[in-house]
Length: 176
Image (cartoon, rainbow, N blue to C red; front, side):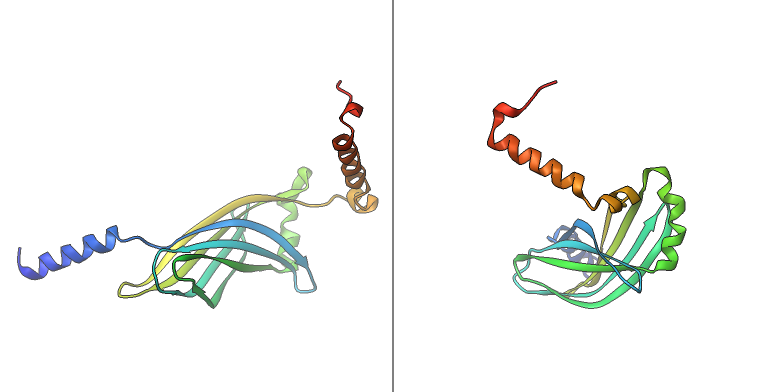
C-alpha cells in the first residue's frame, strides 16, 4: 500500500466517523386553502454540531397519497443552519386544486387522506461538498364532514365547556 492509498483511507475513515448535521420533520399542518390550491407547511428541525453556520443549498420535496405523487418541488437557497444550534425550517408544500379532485378516491368512507412527505435537505459541507439528508413523515389529515361544517364546531365548544366544568367541580363527574 503506497502513501496515497494510506492517505485516502485515513481521510475516508475520518469523514465517515465525523459528526454530521441531523434533521427531523416535527409536524405537517394544513396552512390554508386558496385560489391556487391547498398549502401545507412542514416544520423541520435541523441540528448543526459545528461552530460555523452551514448553508442549505436547496430542499426537494415530494408529497404522496396512496403512492400517487400529489405535489413535488424544489425550494432554492432557504438559508443557513445556525452554528452549534438547532434551526427550525418552515417548508411550504402547495397542492393544486386539480390534484385534489383525484384524492377523492383515497378519501373514501373515513373522510381522511393518508399522506407521506419526503424531503431531501441538501446542505453544503465544507471540504466534503453537498450532502443530502433524506427525511420522511407519514400521517393522515381528517377532513371536515358536511355536518361539521353545518354545525360550525358547536359540538366541540360544548364538549370543551363540559370538560372545564368537570375540572372546576370534580363531584359532578358521573361514572357509568
